[in-house]
Image 1 (tube, rainbow, N blue to C red):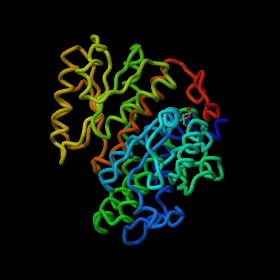
Image 2: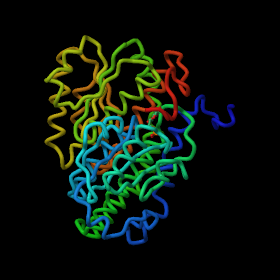
Image 3: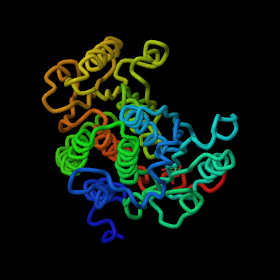
Length: 372
Ligand code: G6P
């Protein structure tokens, strides 16, 4: 009913707008007054975390994309090697696991069969399993050694939005917690990241407040049968997630690529007018990546692409290379996916809406897939 949707046309829009509060909820009580991570609820000891020499993340769909983002943060902060794998592939390829491996299983529902079977395989190999789930008491957390719950509340829309952002928040906490436990980050370094993390909900709200321009943009794009997303670093998994949203609800051939891979194949997909959405890295600090993305944008422009850039406020270079630029607030690079994903979610909703699709119940898809 309309009441349950809080005045929004769809649950998906309602859930997109809940993101500032559910991300704040997921962080609440897990950071102390000194800006340290306090995850006492995660029942793995300091020694357990010290014994780890490798991390695997297993998940499906949107949760897999949260895992891909986490790899960048976890390896940077903890210096542990981390692999991210689709749960449906994991146990069929004889992965190298033992008691010093930490497996992180990410599942909104806690019931996805592919992820559950990957988890069971990990446990038979004696790995420790930490799950990140939105559903208290569901099967995946029950079968894990430890769990950290996201606090997204019930997600009704089949296409996941708020669960994704809370998974990112929870994964950042876990990665910082591991770094803290293993003593690889100084306390004040952790506190710096934590301060940036707790500032994110207000910035997500800013993105939402500024995202009405997307309606118009989507209406112009909705005649295209193909949309490409390109990114580098954490912008790459965000590109994959943006493409997945568009596939799920707009039924468009949407693909995400690492921008550096364009020249190795995907650039041949570009025709005059093909929309390309570029996740532009911050010009600060990682200016090398920023420069590289600008040249990738020039490459696709030269082939006739219609370029939409998602860039950071204060980036005064990008707009000259794009047909349209959407700005998000400044943030540390590793945390930026909490912001840059949001315009892509909105774009998918507007695009599907312009096509007249059922946004909350897309064809052929289920909210939770309990078969392998
Ligand atoms: C289904 C849903 C997706 C979800 C995926 C994994 O395919 O339609 O939105 O990302 O399952 O679900 P999970 O509950 O394990 O996160």
